[in-house]
Amino acid sequence: MRIPSVNELKEKFSKLYPNYPISYFTEPSRRVAQIIREKWQKKELQKLEESYLENLMKEVFKKYETPSLKRVINATGVVIHTNLGRAPLCKKAIEEITKVAKYYSNLEFDLKEGKRGSRYVHVEEILKEITQAESALIVNNNAAAVLISLNTLAYGKEVIVSRGELVEIGGSFRIPEVMKWAGCILKEVGTTNKTHLSDYENAINENTALLLKVHKSNFEIIGFAKEVSVEDLVTLGKKFGLPVMKDLGSGCFIDFSKYGLKKEPTVQEVLKAGVDIVTFSGDKLLGGPQAGIILGKKEFIEKIRKNPLNRALRIDKLTLAGLEATLRLYRDENLALEHIPVLKMILTPKEILKKRAKYLLKKLRKLKLKEFNFEVIETINKTGGGALPTLDLISYAVAVKSPLSPQNLQKILRENEPPIITRIEEERLLIDVRCLFDEDYKEIISAFEKFGNDKKYTS
Ligand SMILES: *Cc1c(COP(=O)(O)O)cnc(C)c1O
Image (tube, rainbow, N blue to C red; front, side, top):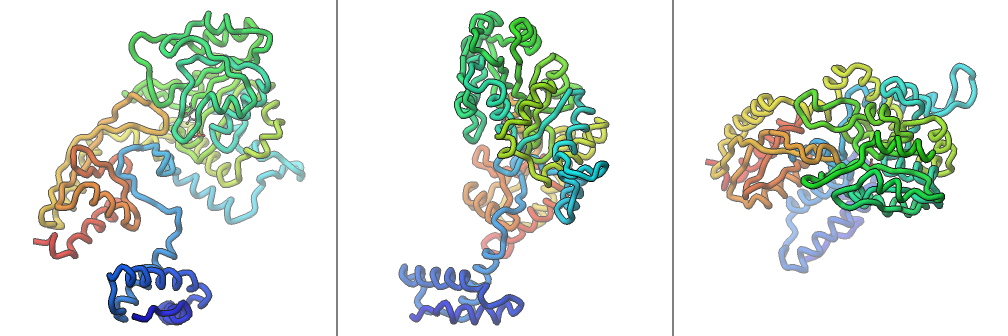
């Protein structure tokens, strides 16, 4: 068998897609030739039919044209899924991002004075308004916020942290390591399950620069356990003239216990307790774009702002636009609950989730796929993203049993366009409805519809 040359394939591609310049097809042609060569070597292909070649070329080209970073459907039920991009943004944020992306903006231009301004002013006022913080600064993400705060407040000095709070957040963020790279000396106190105020007090010496509390974002210590409250730590800090910092992780402005969920400390409460610096993420429970928010006392925030690291960790204009639009919704709690997708998804009543699952069930059963069994089941979700770790949210899913193994079915759905990300429980594939957008349903249905093209699965 003769394998077509790259030049021949380029010509063929040109005829298939006349609107593209021929140079565009060099790489797809190489890929096609490579696939044919491999298939021929493995003896999977003896003869190259024209129709086979054309289909292969179309398939390769479609893949070549699809962006690597793309929309997926989150059917896992995990609202703040770090691997799936954490928080989907609210409509207003998307609008503002689009405007700032398309046109020039006053990013660092003071329109009143007609001279250079600061990029941070755009979110500083609104953050102060919502949280009553004295001052605010935004960096690239919360890891950066912790790093720059530690580096500014305690470079070369000791930072006291409870052993129960030396946490690892997914993706290599570990407090002892961040401490090291910030140039600080970690001073561990207490034990895994219990830390007393006296443990902190006894560890204070002339080289101590900071008292740090880290929110246990993704786990809880239950049973014989004790930790020191922020309030007590603040009192201790005052006594010794030491600043107190809290890494809140997934900071939120809304008290979820009001809505029947578990209590997570809000940003406002932590500030009210008197901490000097609080850090949290923009894209966890807050529901905005990726950002690290630093709030607190003006004297410390100003120092952090002047740290040369700030230039390396600075936030870009698109994030600023999205963050400002998201923050503005928090001026009214109901507005935030109504428009911020992450909040809406966490607080959707289970009756509504059940209704949605039943709707999906009806549509899937209508496809009449042979040997596919669909049913609605109750499931338990985690919010994800290092928030509300021990909270179980009741949700609903369509459970699928099919002639395919659940792993195989999961893979086929993952390779769908758009990919559908699911989970497997008890040998069944689950399509959880909590995080589905209205427009996701038809994609899921049409992904299953494709099984209907295979005679094996039609009755
Ligand atoms: C998530 C988290 C971080 C890291 O935040 P990113 O926004 O992912 O950089 C740091 N500390 C705590 C406690 C967290 O929960």
